[in-house]
Image 1 (cartoon, rainbow, N blue to C red):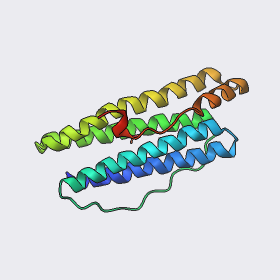
Image 2 (cartoon, rainbow, N blue to C red; image 1 turned 90 degrees about the horizontal axis):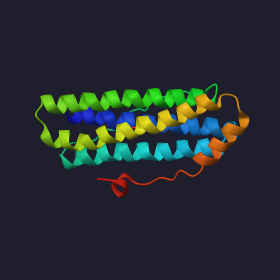
Image 3 (cartoon, rainbow, N blue to C red; image 1 turned 90 degrees about the vertical axis):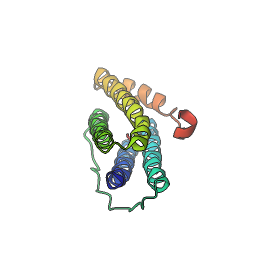
Image 4 (cartoon, rainbow, N blue to C red; image 1 turned 45 degrees about the horizontal axis):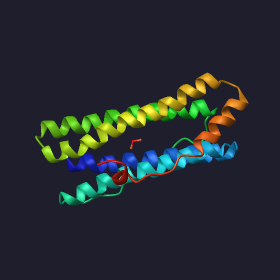
Length: 166
Ligand code: FEO
């Protein structure tokens, strides 16, 4: 179980890396609000990795940092990037569900309990990526719509998970 959780530390850090890559992409096309959203998302992913990191330590395990895969660096459009984001989050949900299944099989109640935070978090992660994806579909090629959404996404700030809910 602890080995699988250690792999999830890596997966969460890959998520941070992927979103930073998207932040760089959005910077390159002068969409600073979209870039801000991705930077905040990357911070969230690091905080997810740290939740697993801390939990492994609490349980007397030893965290091992592993190589992080290189993420893609280019997307065709903001919509393309948010399609990737949404798909990626559904994959992460699958990973979390696999961990929950393993905790159940191993009758590891403490880990099962810890993972429930991530089960709820993934509902939000998918919903927020999907909301922006759907907005981008409606906007299509309308430059004004993109600029308005960019202004809205500039507002996002990072809230450490422990302050947001427990
Ligand atoms: Fe760590 Fe985006 O889920």
